[in-house]
Image (cartoon, rainbow, N blue to C red):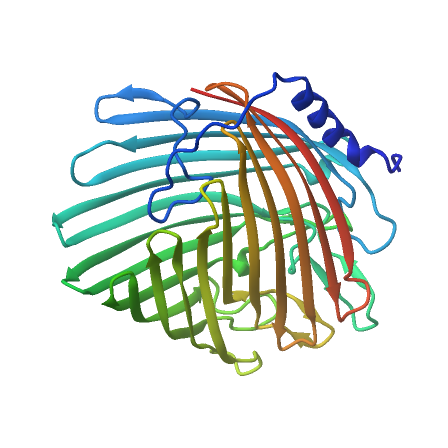
Amino acid sequence: MKPSSLPFLALALASTVLTALPAATPVSAQELQRGESVLERRRPEVEQLGIRAGSFRILPRIETGLTYESNVFATENDTRDDFIWVTQPRVDVRSDFNNHALNFSASGNIGRFFDYSSENYADYRAQVDGRYDITRDSSVSGLLFSRRDHEGRSDPNFDVSLGTGTVVPRFAEPVNYFTHGGEASFNQRFNRLRVRLTGGAQYTSYQDAELTNGRTESQEDRDRWNYTGAARVGYEFIQGYEAFVQGSYNWTRYRLSRDFGGVNRDSDGYEVVGGLSTDLTGLINGEIYAGYLSRTYDDPTLKDFGGLAVGGRLNWSVTQLTSVTGSLSRQVRESTYARGSQIASSYNRTVAAVGVDHELLRTLLLNARVQWRQDDFNGVDRTDDVYTLGAGASYQLSRYVFLNGGYTYEKRNSNLSGFDYSDNLVYLRVGAQM
């Protein structure tokens, strides 16, 4: 194992680079616009210009650099560390019409491990979205997307636990999967009343996985369609305050009628919530809601779920230089986890997070994040609590070159033996944009 001082090399390098740069004095910040955070504020002197192509702007950028990870396999004991070379290209194409909108984005996330090449990954995301303004108060919008992701070692579905309680990793490498889909929505405003109707569908398919025993296992019994329909009605009872109710119905249909264990995993669910949306002079904006969430499975051996639905997001502009953001969400997610004779139908993921962004200089942004996540499995006695702390900085050397660096600590506490782990990540990347 590498010496324990290695996690601090990247931070030391970042500190050296920033110290060597010419000293700068704070510049009077441009006024925050309504609903805007410090990160989103325009900085004309260093912002990305892109390439003009008629009524569109093409915005290419790329980041690349080194990440150190102290626990590559997310294990409780016998941890292994490694360095990862990460490259993240991205291009955005944005329209500049007087009415309507049409945008495109594509990005990649490629990681190459120095010692443990089995953990290499190459993810991508591509999306096209648009909006057609029917009148001043009504519009239709839609999007199509395609992405490739991977299930890392810390994913709740990655390991299985035998009846003896020992944890046995099934997969020798990350499991890759693809998701393709789309969404369409209609928005209408009647004076103080707002209505939104949404429908969407997506298909998820998994690649075959290599097992630790050298064999290859098909994952096609996890391939599935997800369909969603939703409606929201809001009423602005006081300027800057909107009360709303929204409901959604979703259904999941697997490509195979039963998985390889003989279980039918098709399900139906709904969510009904009420909430409040606020835009208080741009100082505080966001929304919060609560209600009921339910999911029912076709197979009687799988446990249904019904319980509290809660969520929201808030942005607080403490000053013109500091923003605080908070978010809360709860959702039911698909699972393939099994423990002995127990089979999980799903797990409930609850996430609460708070972040702070501060503009120390016009070209130097600081950030900090704290997050709690709980994965509570339905049908299996397993509950994981994951705590994440992070801090970072972004320095704009010029309009075309920037540095990003930071540190993240993550710890998982589980009620099952062998599932706990802690991990440290330190990264430093250089970026270029046009």
